[in-house]
Length: 300
Ligand code: SF4
Ligand code: SF4
Image (cartoon, rainbow, N blue to C red; front, side, top):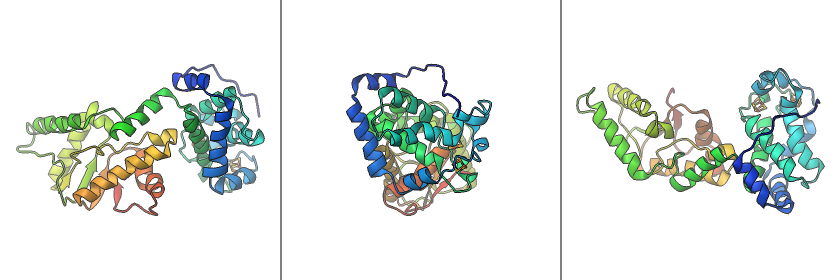
């Protein structure tokens, strides 16, 4: 593998944390994840990878960096997890800075490479473990961490208060009535067919998308509603930080609202990671093999 060379990058979320922690805390976080939280997949994947490189050309980071081998999926694991295992968790702050750079900016956990590996090695799972270690240390890019903190406080990603949500929907309903007479955007209605959850951005910056969805529901004659409380935003940025506690809390809230309103299904708009957390990762984290009521994508 050629040398790992990158331009220096500063991120207050990572750099400030690393100023204030010691290497003992880093080791504890690594041990907790690699010896405790990780499943048998860790050992299987680490010992099975033949370094054949068949997955390399499937990764957009590798391709968009002129086939630089340090961006290949297996190389990113070698420079992070394998390095931690080799050093038995006794890694430096500079190592953590390098790992954080790789796992937060050179792999977006898309899992494309797993489709090309003859052994089915899930590189994204391994990279996710490194993100989890960074999360436990507190070395997470500031932009992501800010959104995770917002999820913790409000369940949505943009620090939107519950009253702001209600005001926004009422305002959109008023606007919609200029186009569709007596249009309603129902909130907190019980026994509806569909509970529609919105993207955080739809409530704050891209409200036209929410209005468009309302038009579709009205014209299609669907019995629908949206939450009249926190839990209306289907995004889950905790997934990016691998803050599994917050991720589970957000997904639980979606299902709790659905149970409370006794709807038949949850429908969400466009967002790949949110679909993954709502239907797969988050639901399993909460102990369900499958989502307890159907949670489907708007396109479906
Ligand atoms: S999961 Fe990561 S390494 Fe694999 S293809 Fe996607 S971005 Fe590349
Ligand atoms: S992850 Fe699979 S395809 Fe990629 S280098 Fe390892 S064995 Fe080869």
